[in-house]
Length: 236
Image 1 (spheres, rainbow, N blue to C red):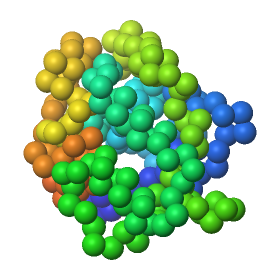
Image 2 (cartoon, rainbow, N blue to C red):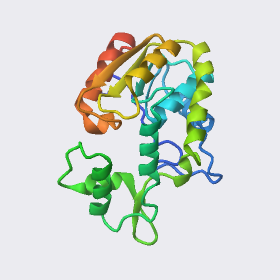
Image 3 (cartoon, helix red, strand yellow):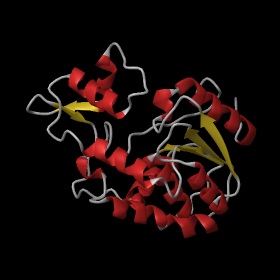
Image 4 (cartoon, one colour):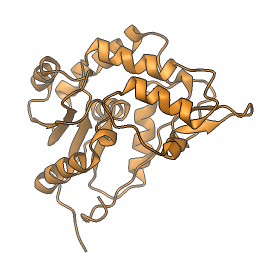
């Protein structure tokens, strides 16, 4: 993004990555959207938003709250995702609460979840997704409370975004979808078009839900081509 002339800001969401965990354990879409607005308030204008999975839902919530980006990119997420795919992601995130004794054990868990992705010969890169606990075991770098208690709560929260997005200001929008995704189907894309008719869709053939991790170069090209047409970089 920087090489293409953009000022890019990438932040870890509340309760995820290197960001702190909420003391109250509340991670609603509204709270996440408030965090996004706080970041945008310190960022250059105009701006485009790129949000993958949970980040995409956060972006859609922000739009319903009145945020108006110059362009929007959603990565493998729609308003009514496939229930089975969402459940599989939730199950992975909730699995292994006791953590892992080694990087190899964590790599085994990833390989079981995503058997189509070639396994890295050196699992050291997984360290950026793990935290070492006081007991010496490695755990994923997200607060377990980041997920609603049950799947229905999650799906209902997304359903409540539908009416808000219908009335939100429309901006150029790209959906980058993993062609092997269990979350975004042809039917869910067609339904999404009824709510956001301006949407463009780009399929990444060799990717599942984790599009950037599965096929990063294609992912980048798709985004930069879209932004080049709809939100060109302002070079000095």
